[in-house]
Image (cartoon, rainbow, N blue to C red; front, side):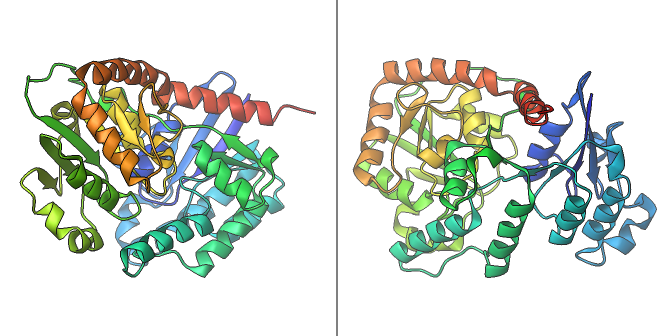
Amino acid sequence: MLNLSSLFTIYCNDREVSHTFFSLCEQWNYPDFKVRMVVPNCEPSCRRSNLVESVPRYLKWLYYRNADGPRDCTEKFFLRDLNNFDAIYLWPNTSIETFRKVKQQRKPIFLERINCYTKQAKFIIDDASSRLGIAPQHKITADMIQQEEEEISLADFIFCPSPDVKKSFMGAGVPEHKLILTSYGWSPKRFPNFSLDKALSDTITVIFVGSVCVRKGAHLLLRAWEKAGIKGRLLLCGSMEPAIAETCSSILARSDVIHRDYTSDIALAYREADFFAFPSLEEGSPLVTYEAMANGLPVLTSPMGAGSIARDGKDGIIVSPYDEEALVTGLQQLAGCAELRLRMSDSALERAQEFTWEKVARRRAELVLERLKPG
């Protein structure tokens, strides 16, 4: 049996990145493969027999006064008993000092990369900002890029949740034998009242879910929507970056463009929609695409937005995000043909069933065991 210790240095609340961490690791309790999850603290709903909260609950107030306090405490706890484990699984926000100490223990290191190679991500967002004539909105620094390069050199294996993520690391010169192509997934429990039933309407609803920002191509979708001339509405669900509000103000003012800064019931929002549009410029493997398909929505997306799940011509239409004509045509095709939407909806829904977290986690475990076979 393989015993693995995983480190996640951010409060675990089963949302955003911690949702990905928790959804993968909580499944890893098989006869041949078990994991310990080490976190600073977590929501009560996340507590499991194999999840360890390293910050004493009665001292949280003390540790959280210092921004690095929870991480420092968690890493110290994590490093105490590495000899009891066969391999190590490190997540973003781990200090480089901890990487070095783990390496000294000669334990195989599996590294999670939730996005593309950082230097490439910076280039993509800088380029997009330049095209818009604005200053880049990201917070990527030279130190972050340098740390990632050392992390990569210390890691034995790197999980790449989509083909484009793997491609970005290969482009940076990372040996292919280190790169493990995998995926992310979705949780059926997030959609307990799932139904394909939708009120009949003579207007089309297109939905975008996620941060309404330059990185996710929101401006490209808005421009394509304006040119597509569709009888319907574009529904944007997510907090809006000031750059989008400023550069796309006239389109956002249209009566057929609706922005919801906060959506308490994302399942209801998906049920309102006829298809999902997401021309993202830089991603890891966006959970919103998995969830949209799990809700039976065809997708109009970019290669980055497709992640490891969406297939062009089957579950939707995949186009280059900067190909405005292709985006406009994709919007028009999906809006104008109910038969096409139905066919792609059926395909998307069927495809999504292979990407529940339970199945994704089992495949991940098999990949780990395969890499650690003797000889």
